[in-house]
Structure formats: structure tokens, C-alpha cells
Image (cartoon, rainbow, N blue to C red; front, side, top):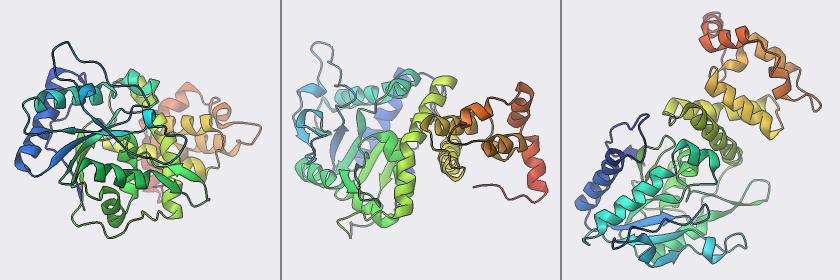
Length: 332
């Protein structure tokens, strides 16, 4: 199983909803479906953040398409707020217009102010499958509700493209195939708002994901990671690259290693890894501050004692190179 990109140009710091950005994604998707004519195109939508926008008068509308609800058997997912599928017919003359509308929504939800506002992504992806939409809906529904390693019922939010981007690397090859099921290619925006195609090589061999405790530990951190990335995107005005996402994931794990319990402390810790240095917590002054943290004295208070000069030194990273040369083992 591999996750391949769509040979897309980097969108960089340009407006993600600019006509060239929208057109680039639309062209890539249309090329895929023109090469794979046996595939249906199912648009995965989550109405919980907010409904899809109304189109201009006289234009094709996503709102006019029949919804295939993903039937999640839990009170937290009433029918009107459950994710659903819309079937976009690649052979229909309005396919390009509807596809463009969906891409505009997906990219609009990646604007810094939209991500900072939350609460999620409306477009979960464009699913390529030869299977009927109802079969895909039932398959996806069967994997949303999971019981974690602590016996708690959780919603695995893979229908949110930002959540999927963090979940995918955690899964084994067989688990990825299980999640995909009848979906041959799951096209979606990745953590940096670039198109990705999540694909499998073989048919699914198992009906359950069977997530392991260490995977659940990583998944439980994903909400914090995505929130920290949202704050970083809002502060910088640009989408994160792969290294930034990896730094956020690693910092979230180290925050637990340092036994930070408060949510704001964890968010601040991840934010410092993104804004200062990926391994900022190995700096002697930060290590000292971490040693002062207690249930009565939060990390945010301890680290606020750092001077501007100390923070500038951390940002420059010269201390990190010296530590590495001395043979100190750095956290992953």
C-alpha cells in the first residue's frame, strides 16, 4: 500500500482558493477519473462544521444531489449531522462544475482563519470506487465507532481530511486496506492542504481495524496536534510542510513524556516546537523550566520566565548542533 501524490505543483503561500489553485486540483482529479473510467466519484461531506454553500443562480449545485448518509449508530450522529456521500458522475457534463465547487469548499476550509475557527473540514475527500455508493457508506460507517484500549467508545474521524492525514501514517498496511475497503483511491487534501491519493495494493483481508494500544496513544494526541497546527497556520499565514507536521506529532508525544497534563500546556509545548525549534526542550534553560512544572505550577508559567535572549538562542539552534556533536541522544 502506498500514498502517492497527484503530481501537483506546490501551492505555497498563495491564496488556497485562488482560481489557479482550484484549477490545479480539479485538473488532477479529472485526469484520474478519465484514466479510470470504471470508477465512481463519491464526494465525502461532513455537514457538522456547516452546510455546503448555495451555488450561483442557474449553476449546477451539490445541494441538489441525493445524499447517501453514512449510517453511524450513535446519538452523537443524528441523520442531519452525519457524514454523507454525493455521487459525482464523471461522464456527466456538469461533472467539472460540481467538482470545482467541491474543491473550492475544501480549499476554503484550509484558509488560516477557517482552520483557526474550526470545527472541522466539510470535504473529506473524493473517493474512487467501482462499488455502489450505499455499499461504501455502510463500509465507512462500520469503522467510525471504535472501542479504544481503555474501553471507551470513540469516533475515528477519518471523514475529516486533516484527521485522516494524521491517522494514515499510524495505520499498518493491512489496517489501511481495511479502512479503504471498496475504495480504490481516496483523494483528499493532506495536512498541508496539498492533494494526496491514499491507495491500497490488495483487497482488504480483515473486517476490523484492530488498533493496538500504541496506535490509540498516537490517535488520542491527534486532536491536540491539529489544534496546534491550526494556531501555527493562523500565526504564520501559511500551510505547514511535511517537516512541520512531523515536528508537531513528535512534540505531542514528548509533551506526554514530560508529563504535561494541562491541555493549554500541551498546546503551548507543541507550539514552541513549531515556532522556536523542533527539539527546543533539549535546551538547558527549557529543561530547567520543565523540571519546575508541577500540578500547581504549569508549563506555560515556567517557560514564561525565559528571556527574549534565551528564546532567540533557542531559535538559532546553535546549542542543538553542539549537543549533537557531543554525542547527546536527541529525542525522535
